[in-house]
Amino acid sequence: MITLFSVDWYLISIIFFIGLYCMLVSRNMFKQLLGLQIMSKACVLAIILCGAATNNVNLSQAIAITMILMEVIAVLAGLGLILKAWKITGCPDLVKLSKLKG
Image (cartoon, rainbow, N blue to C red):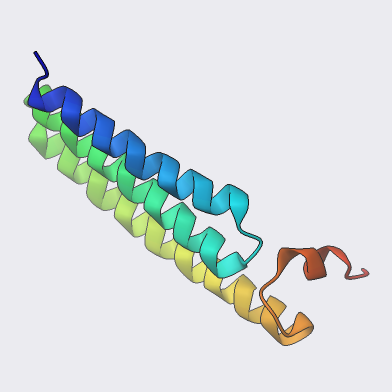
């Protein structure tokens, strides 16, 4: 019999691998940043699910909030790098960044 807990883990793993696929297939930096965000949201869901399974909801909520704050910082840094790359190359393609000298 399939329990609700195993279905939750199955859906979280699907979300995580969607983000991983988005990061591996795309050369566009915006799409890679979006894939990173999808993967991190799956990790937050996994942390909350673990907290619910162990009846330690307060700790899992604190860790999830801390992780969300770290995601915001990572997104801001990533967007800053993407904007700088856009000014230099004119497009958010990673292949054009590898051709830069310096």
